[in-house]
Image (cartoon, rainbow, N blue to C red; front, side, top):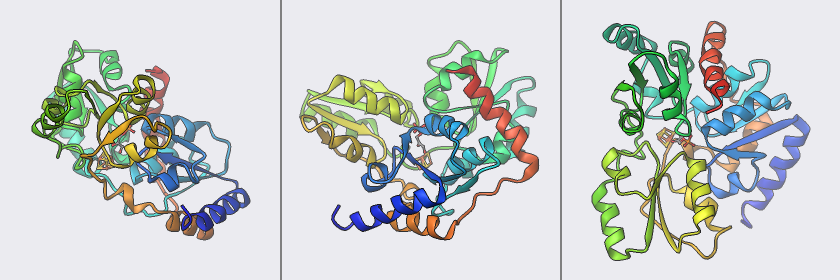
Length: 303
Ligand code: 13P
Ligand code: SF4
């Protein structure tokens, strides 16, 4: 933190000068998450905040699809991402053309796309969802069959909770697909008092080993509420780092996986971004309205 302090001070000063708000995803490192973010949360909360904020400039501390979502919801604002190479294995797994292919395969079925998609894919979908509301969104769709893209594991996990027939695209999150039920069982066998909570981008067999599954914000709230003696947060590494400081009684056991995309965002490039007002996120004009419709339909459901 001694090393971070000059950056944090400089970012805070420049942020004020630019009228910028910093949105920090739960996977940001503590110095970004606690140090400079004005608003912290999961994908859903960040999207809602992007639509609501009155600041003329948004600095998205997260990955590219999150910055695009902010731009889609607030096209009149300047949306900056400190490193535009911060992608996502889910967002890069599917195109708008693939969505059309799914529609042709399942005529009449509504397409629910995870927010972890490009603006082009959102525009081609009927509605978006996040890990916080996926089951409610799918359940709210008309018809017996619902298409979920692009996360095959999230879709399988949701399929077990809803009355609809769910069909899906086989994308995966490179962070969550690597966890195995065996490694989690080993932690529980070593200490049966270990709580295990997992993100729904994990394979169903991993979710089966967990005491709770939910979005990143839901996971954090679970730990705050239950205050387990020992917990494994089966997700990206920064999650434990970000809550550990407020819960000294809880031991956070790591196996965790790093998202290399999220980790492209650093204090240094946040400062550079505000200084140079780059990299500005641009969404093609013709995609803004249809993509916003899909994201707004999700927000309006209030799920
Ligand atoms: P949530 O914060 O919406 O749970 O998303 C997790 C994730 O992997 C985002 O990239
Ligand atoms: Fe994408 Fe997974 Fe990284 Fe989130 S954690 S940005 S879903 S690759």
